Image: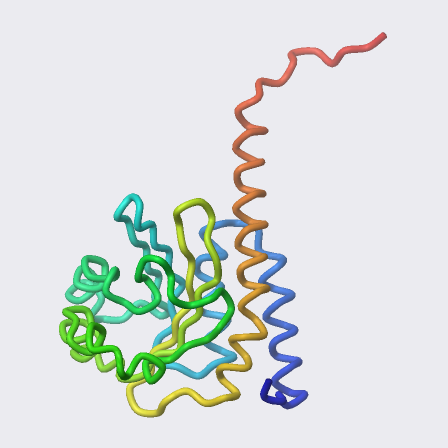
Length: 194
């Protein structure tokens, strides 16, 4: 693994502390890409949820780009063409990948997703990681850049934070499910005493 400078490790530590402290699913959806984008320089970062079984995709870019209303439907309709979204998943969890890793895959370079979303929005380089799955839903984190490819240090940072992002997400989803179950249980009108 690439050695990271102490300053970067401190920034990662602050991110992880905030990550684990976030208990709201919606707040965590926003914090994951926004906070990670402070660790890995990018034009856009996104936290993604794919459910191939239900044909449902959810992408939250940070910040939301001006072009999202025009190009968002394209990526959502063709997300199954992304190398990470292929079924079965060709990438192991927590193993950062870039477009250059799939340079020789003609299906990717000739896909509608690549030509009608990534090229028009200027996302020439992408660093992404498969975070894991809960049921049929797959989770990933992606960073896009127009000009400069991602470095070994960028990959190392993503490799370091991705298991924590996955763990925080799973814990928050469990906490959310637990809260809903507790709210569904009616409370007794009077406390019971002996």
